[in-house]
Length: 360
Image (cartoon, rainbow, N blue to C red; front, side):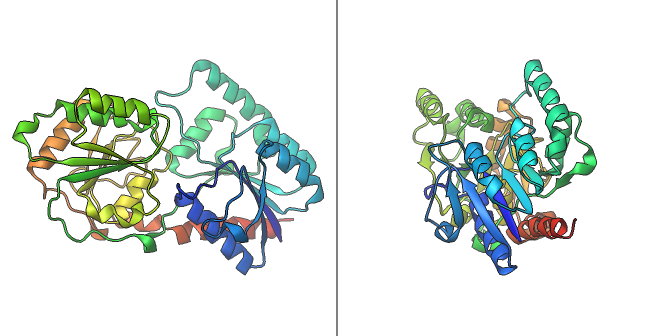
Protein backbone atom coordinates (compact mmCIF):
# COMPACT_ATOMS: atom_id res chain seq x y z
CA UNK A 1 0.00 0.00 0.00
CA UNK A 2 1.15 3.53 -0.78
CA UNK A 3 0.14 6.51 1.39
CA UNK A 4 1.11 10.18 1.64
CA UNK A 5 1.60 12.56 4.55
CA UNK A 6 1.41 16.27 3.71
CA UNK A 7 2.77 18.24 6.62
CA UNK A 8 3.27 22.00 6.88
CA UNK A 9 5.88 21.59 9.61
CA UNK A 10 9.46 22.77 9.30
CA UNK A 11 12.02 20.13 10.24
CA UNK A 12 14.53 21.76 12.58
CA UNK A 13 17.28 19.89 14.47
CA UNK A 14 17.35 22.59 17.15
CA UNK A 15 13.60 22.15 17.75
CA UNK A 16 12.78 18.47 18.00
CA UNK A 17 9.24 18.11 19.28
CA UNK A 18 6.73 15.40 19.99
CA UNK A 19 5.50 15.33 16.40
CA UNK A 20 9.03 14.66 15.12
CA UNK A 21 9.16 11.50 17.22
CA UNK A 22 5.69 10.53 15.99
CA UNK A 23 6.70 10.95 12.34
CA UNK A 24 9.79 8.78 12.85
CA UNK A 25 7.96 5.97 14.65
CA UNK A 26 4.97 6.06 12.30
CA UNK A 27 7.29 5.79 9.30
CA UNK A 28 9.17 2.87 10.87
CA UNK A 29 5.96 1.01 11.73
CA UNK A 30 4.51 1.59 8.27
CA UNK A 31 7.61 0.24 6.56
CA UNK A 32 7.59 -2.80 8.86
CA UNK A 33 3.98 -3.43 7.79
CA UNK A 34 4.79 -3.13 4.08
CA UNK A 35 3.28 0.35 3.75
CA UNK A 36 5.22 2.88 1.66
CA UNK A 37 4.97 6.48 2.86
CA UNK A 38 5.76 9.60 0.83
CA UNK A 39 6.37 12.55 3.15
CA UNK A 40 5.80 16.11 1.92
CA UNK A 41 7.44 18.78 4.11
CA UNK A 42 8.45 22.40 3.47
CA UNK A 43 12.14 21.49 3.84
CA UNK A 44 14.45 18.50 3.95
CA UNK A 45 16.38 17.22 6.97
CA UNK A 46 18.83 14.54 8.09
CA UNK A 47 18.49 14.65 11.88
CA UNK A 48 16.71 11.86 13.77
CA UNK A 49 15.78 9.31 11.09
CA UNK A 50 14.64 11.77 8.41
CA UNK A 51 17.48 10.80 6.05
CA UNK A 52 15.74 7.44 5.53
CA UNK A 53 12.35 8.99 4.68
CA UNK A 54 10.90 9.12 1.19
CA UNK A 55 10.78 12.90 1.60
CA UNK A 56 9.72 15.51 -0.94
CA UNK A 57 10.78 19.02 0.12
CA UNK A 58 8.57 21.77 -1.32
CA UNK A 59 10.71 24.87 -0.91
CA UNK A 60 10.94 27.28 -2.61
CA UNK A 61 7.41 26.45 -3.78
CA UNK A 62 4.32 26.17 -1.62
CA UNK A 63 3.74 22.77 -0.05
CA UNK A 64 0.24 22.36 -1.49
CA UNK A 65 1.43 23.31 -4.98
CA UNK A 66 4.17 20.68 -4.98
CA UNK A 67 1.83 17.98 -3.68
CA UNK A 68 -0.86 18.71 -6.26
CA UNK A 69 1.75 18.57 -9.04
CA UNK A 70 2.93 15.14 -7.84
CA UNK A 71 -0.50 13.68 -7.14
CA UNK A 72 -1.60 12.64 -10.69
CA UNK A 73 1.48 10.40 -10.94
CA UNK A 74 0.73 8.62 -7.66
CA UNK A 75 -1.73 5.95 -6.57
CA UNK A 76 -2.13 6.75 -2.89
CA UNK A 77 -4.65 4.82 -0.81
CA UNK A 78 -4.62 7.29 2.11
CA UNK A 79 -3.57 10.94 2.31
CA UNK A 80 -2.96 12.49 5.74
CA UNK A 81 -2.57 16.23 6.22
CA UNK A 82 -0.99 17.82 9.30
CA UNK A 83 -0.79 21.53 10.17
CA UNK A 84 -2.68 22.62 7.05
CA UNK A 85 -5.64 24.97 7.15
CA UNK A 86 -8.79 22.87 7.01
CA UNK A 87 -11.71 23.05 4.57
CA UNK A 88 -9.93 24.96 1.81
CA UNK A 89 -10.02 24.61 -2.00
CA UNK A 90 -6.86 22.48 -1.69
CA UNK A 91 -8.93 19.55 -0.41
CA UNK A 92 -11.39 19.84 -3.28
CA UNK A 93 -8.47 19.78 -5.73
CA UNK A 94 -7.04 16.67 -4.05
CA UNK A 95 -10.45 15.00 -4.30
CA UNK A 96 -10.60 15.74 -8.03
CA UNK A 97 -7.15 14.24 -8.62
CA UNK A 98 -7.26 11.19 -6.35
CA UNK A 99 -9.55 8.47 -5.07
CA UNK A 100 -7.52 8.18 -1.87
CA UNK A 101 -9.14 8.51 1.54
CA UNK A 102 -8.36 12.02 2.79
CA UNK A 103 -7.68 12.35 6.53
CA UNK A 104 -7.16 15.88 7.88
CA UNK A 105 -5.57 16.26 11.31
CA UNK A 106 -6.38 19.43 13.23
CA UNK A 107 -3.48 20.64 15.40
CA UNK A 108 -4.19 24.34 14.93
CA UNK A 109 -4.67 26.40 18.12
CA UNK A 110 -7.55 28.87 18.24
CA UNK A 111 -6.82 32.50 19.11
CA UNK A 112 -7.37 33.64 22.68
CA UNK A 113 -10.83 35.17 22.80
CA UNK A 114 -11.98 33.33 19.68
CA UNK A 115 -12.25 34.39 16.06
CA UNK A 116 -13.73 37.66 14.84
CA UNK A 117 -17.27 37.50 13.43
CA UNK A 118 -15.83 37.88 9.92
CA UNK A 119 -13.45 34.95 10.41
CA UNK A 120 -16.23 32.83 11.90
CA UNK A 121 -18.41 33.51 8.88
CA UNK A 122 -15.56 32.65 6.50
CA UNK A 123 -14.99 29.33 8.27
CA UNK A 124 -18.68 28.45 8.15
CA UNK A 125 -18.73 29.09 4.40
CA UNK A 126 -15.56 27.03 3.88
CA UNK A 127 -17.03 24.20 5.94
CA UNK A 128 -20.19 24.21 3.84
CA UNK A 129 -18.19 24.22 0.58
CA UNK A 130 -15.26 21.91 1.30
CA UNK A 131 -15.80 19.60 4.28
CA UNK A 132 -17.34 16.95 2.01
CA UNK A 133 -13.96 16.55 0.28
CA UNK A 134 -12.44 15.27 3.54
CA UNK A 135 -13.30 11.70 4.55
CA UNK A 136 -12.17 11.93 8.17
CA UNK A 137 -11.13 14.68 10.56
CA UNK A 138 -8.78 13.91 13.44
CA UNK A 139 -9.00 16.04 16.58
CA UNK A 140 -6.24 15.75 19.17
CA UNK A 141 -8.64 16.26 22.08
CA UNK A 142 -12.35 16.37 22.86
CA UNK A 143 -12.03 20.15 23.16
CA UNK A 144 -10.60 20.26 19.64
CA UNK A 145 -13.55 18.21 18.37
CA UNK A 146 -15.94 20.78 19.82
CA UNK A 147 -13.90 23.56 18.20
CA UNK A 148 -14.07 21.84 14.81
CA UNK A 149 -17.85 21.59 14.97
CA UNK A 150 -18.18 25.17 16.21
CA UNK A 151 -15.80 26.54 13.56
CA UNK A 152 -17.16 24.86 10.45
CA UNK A 153 -20.71 24.03 11.48
CA UNK A 154 -21.47 21.52 8.76
CA UNK A 155 -19.04 18.75 9.79
CA UNK A 156 -21.02 15.72 11.02
CA UNK A 157 -19.67 14.57 14.41
CA UNK A 158 -19.43 11.05 12.95
CA UNK A 159 -16.68 12.31 10.61
CA UNK A 160 -14.49 13.43 13.53
CA UNK A 161 -12.32 10.99 15.48
CA UNK A 162 -10.40 11.96 18.60
CA UNK A 163 -6.83 10.66 18.61
CA UNK A 164 -4.69 12.30 21.28
CA UNK A 165 -1.07 13.08 20.60
CA UNK A 166 1.46 10.90 22.36
CA UNK A 167 4.59 11.28 24.46
CA UNK A 168 7.57 8.95 24.22
CA UNK A 169 7.58 8.12 27.92
CA UNK A 170 10.63 5.87 27.52
CA UNK A 171 12.78 8.98 26.99
CA UNK A 172 11.72 10.75 30.19
CA UNK A 173 13.68 10.77 33.43
CA UNK A 174 11.20 10.36 36.28
CA UNK A 175 11.23 12.81 39.17
CA UNK A 176 11.64 10.86 42.42
CA UNK A 177 13.29 13.43 44.68
CA UNK A 178 10.85 16.14 45.76
CA UNK A 179 13.35 18.04 47.91
CA UNK A 180 12.60 21.74 47.20
CA UNK A 181 14.96 23.44 44.78
CA UNK A 182 12.83 26.57 44.31
CA UNK A 183 13.38 26.27 40.58
CA UNK A 184 10.48 26.20 38.11
CA UNK A 185 10.26 25.95 34.34
CA UNK A 186 8.04 26.84 31.44
CA UNK A 187 8.29 25.09 28.07
CA UNK A 188 6.44 26.40 25.04
CA UNK A 189 6.61 28.28 21.79
CA UNK A 190 6.99 31.91 22.87
CA UNK A 191 3.87 33.52 21.47
CA UNK A 192 1.23 35.67 23.21
CA UNK A 193 -1.34 32.85 23.51
CA UNK A 194 0.99 30.99 25.87
CA UNK A 195 0.34 33.63 28.54
CA UNK A 196 3.93 34.04 29.70
CA UNK A 197 3.36 37.78 30.08
CA UNK A 198 0.91 36.82 32.85
CA UNK A 199 3.65 34.83 34.56
CA UNK A 200 6.08 37.76 34.49
CA UNK A 201 3.36 40.06 35.85
CA UNK A 202 2.53 37.54 38.60
CA UNK A 203 6.16 37.32 39.69
CA UNK A 204 6.44 41.12 39.68
CA UNK A 205 3.54 41.31 42.18
CA UNK A 206 5.26 39.12 44.76
CA UNK A 207 6.83 40.59 47.89
CA UNK A 208 10.07 38.73 47.34
CA UNK A 209 11.60 39.95 50.62
CA UNK A 210 9.27 37.54 52.45
CA UNK A 211 9.98 34.57 50.17
CA UNK A 212 12.91 32.24 49.55
CA UNK A 213 14.96 33.01 46.47
CA UNK A 214 13.61 31.17 43.44
CA UNK A 215 14.27 30.91 39.73
CA UNK A 216 12.17 30.35 36.62
CA UNK A 217 13.71 28.96 33.44
CA UNK A 218 11.82 29.72 30.23
CA UNK A 219 12.51 27.14 27.51
CA UNK A 220 11.48 27.90 23.95
CA UNK A 221 11.72 30.46 21.19
CA UNK A 222 9.18 32.49 19.29
CA UNK A 223 7.87 35.90 18.24
CA UNK A 224 7.02 37.03 21.79
CA UNK A 225 10.56 36.51 23.11
CA UNK A 226 11.63 40.13 22.68
CA UNK A 227 8.56 41.57 24.41
CA UNK A 228 8.93 39.10 27.28
CA UNK A 229 12.59 39.99 27.76
CA UNK A 230 11.67 43.68 27.84
CA UNK A 231 8.94 42.97 30.40
CA UNK A 232 11.39 41.05 32.59
CA UNK A 233 13.92 43.89 32.38
CA UNK A 234 11.27 46.53 33.14
CA UNK A 235 10.44 44.72 36.40
CA UNK A 236 14.12 44.01 37.16
CA UNK A 237 13.52 40.26 37.30
CA UNK A 238 16.66 39.16 35.44
CA UNK A 239 18.01 37.38 38.53
CA UNK A 240 14.83 35.26 38.71
CA UNK A 241 13.58 34.67 35.16
CA UNK A 242 16.05 33.23 32.65
CA UNK A 243 15.55 32.61 28.93
CA UNK A 244 17.10 29.28 27.97
CA UNK A 245 16.09 29.02 24.29
CA UNK A 246 15.15 25.71 22.68
CA UNK A 247 16.74 22.64 24.27
CA UNK A 248 16.23 19.32 22.44
CA UNK A 249 17.01 17.31 25.59
CA UNK A 250 14.45 19.02 27.82
CA UNK A 251 12.62 15.72 28.33
CA UNK A 252 15.65 14.56 30.32
CA UNK A 253 15.57 17.61 32.60
CA UNK A 254 12.02 17.86 33.95
CA UNK A 255 13.07 16.04 37.11
CA UNK A 256 15.49 18.88 37.95
CA UNK A 257 12.63 21.33 38.62
CA UNK A 258 9.96 21.73 41.29
CA UNK A 259 7.02 22.33 38.94
CA UNK A 260 5.99 23.27 35.41
CA UNK A 261 4.36 26.70 35.08
CA UNK A 262 2.05 26.89 32.07
CA UNK A 263 -0.19 30.01 32.02
CA UNK A 264 -1.59 29.32 28.55
CA UNK A 265 -4.61 31.06 27.01
CA UNK A 266 -5.03 28.56 24.17
CA UNK A 267 -4.16 24.89 23.65
CA UNK A 268 -5.21 21.96 21.51
CA UNK A 269 -3.37 19.17 23.33
CA UNK A 270 -0.55 20.69 25.41
CA UNK A 271 2.54 18.50 25.09
CA UNK A 272 4.39 20.26 27.92
CA UNK A 273 1.72 19.51 30.52
CA UNK A 274 1.44 15.83 29.56
CA UNK A 275 5.21 15.41 29.37
CA UNK A 276 5.70 17.03 32.78
CA UNK A 277 3.02 14.87 34.39
CA UNK A 278 4.56 11.74 32.86
CA UNK A 279 7.89 12.78 34.41
CA UNK A 280 6.12 13.06 37.81
CA UNK A 281 6.41 16.85 37.85
CA UNK A 282 3.56 18.89 39.39
CA UNK A 283 1.92 21.41 37.04
CA UNK A 284 0.55 24.91 37.66
CA UNK A 285 -1.62 25.83 34.69
CA UNK A 286 -4.81 27.48 33.52
CA UNK A 287 -8.10 25.85 34.40
CA UNK A 288 -9.48 25.31 30.90
CA UNK A 289 -6.79 25.81 28.25
CA UNK A 290 -3.65 24.56 29.96
CA UNK A 291 -5.70 21.75 31.49
CA UNK A 292 -7.47 21.01 28.20
CA UNK A 293 -7.17 17.25 28.82
CA UNK A 294 -8.35 17.48 32.43
CA UNK A 295 -5.28 15.71 33.82
CA UNK A 296 -4.31 18.29 36.46
CA UNK A 297 -6.24 17.94 39.72
CA UNK A 298 -6.14 21.09 41.82
CA UNK A 299 -4.24 20.53 45.04
CA UNK A 300 -3.30 16.96 44.07
CA UNK A 301 -0.79 16.98 41.21
CA UNK A 302 -0.94 20.69 40.48
CA UNK A 303 -2.72 24.00 40.89
CA UNK A 304 -5.23 25.65 38.54
CA UNK A 305 -6.15 29.28 37.89
CA UNK A 306 -8.32 31.16 35.43
CA UNK A 307 -6.84 32.22 32.10
CA UNK A 308 -5.36 35.69 32.51
CA UNK A 309 -5.67 35.42 36.30
CA UNK A 310 -2.45 37.19 37.26
CA UNK A 311 -3.47 37.73 40.89
CA UNK A 312 -4.47 34.08 41.27
CA UNK A 313 -1.24 32.85 39.71
CA UNK A 314 0.78 35.16 41.96
CA UNK A 315 -1.07 33.73 44.98
CA UNK A 316 -0.31 30.16 43.84
CA UNK A 317 3.39 30.98 43.45
CA UNK A 318 3.52 32.50 46.93
CA UNK A 319 1.70 29.51 48.43
CA UNK A 320 4.00 27.04 46.71
CA UNK A 321 7.15 28.92 47.73
CA UNK A 322 6.05 28.99 51.37
CA UNK A 323 4.85 25.36 51.26
CA UNK A 324 7.28 23.76 48.80
CA UNK A 325 6.33 20.16 49.60
CA UNK A 326 2.56 20.66 49.25
CA UNK A 327 2.54 19.12 45.77
CA UNK A 328 3.98 15.85 44.59
CA UNK A 329 3.14 13.78 41.57
CA UNK A 330 3.26 10.18 40.45
CA UNK A 331 1.44 7.68 38.24
CA UNK A 332 -0.96 6.83 41.06
CA UNK A 333 -2.17 10.45 41.21
CA UNK A 334 -3.19 10.56 37.55
CA UNK A 335 -3.24 7.10 35.95
CA UNK A 336 -5.15 8.54 32.96
CA UNK A 337 -1.94 10.10 31.67
CA UNK A 338 -0.75 6.62 30.65
CA UNK A 339 -3.08 6.65 27.63
CA UNK A 340 -1.10 9.50 26.05
CA UNK A 341 1.92 7.46 24.99
CA UNK A 342 3.58 7.71 21.61
CA UNK A 343 3.13 4.00 20.99
CA UNK A 344 -0.65 4.30 21.40
CA UNK A 345 -0.76 7.31 19.08
CA UNK A 346 1.15 5.45 16.35
CA UNK A 347 -1.14 2.43 16.71
CA UNK A 348 -4.24 4.62 16.41
CA UNK A 349 -3.00 6.11 13.13
CA UNK A 350 -2.01 2.69 11.80
CA UNK A 351 -5.54 1.52 12.53
CA UNK A 352 -6.86 4.25 10.24
CA UNK A 353 -4.58 3.03 7.46
CA UNK A 354 -5.77 -0.54 8.03
CA UNK A 355 -9.40 0.55 7.95
CA UNK A 356 -8.87 2.43 4.70
CA UNK A 357 -7.07 -0.54 3.13
CA UNK A 358 -10.12 -2.71 3.75
CA UNK A 359 -12.55 -0.10 2.40
CA UNK A 360 -13.43 -0.50 -1.30
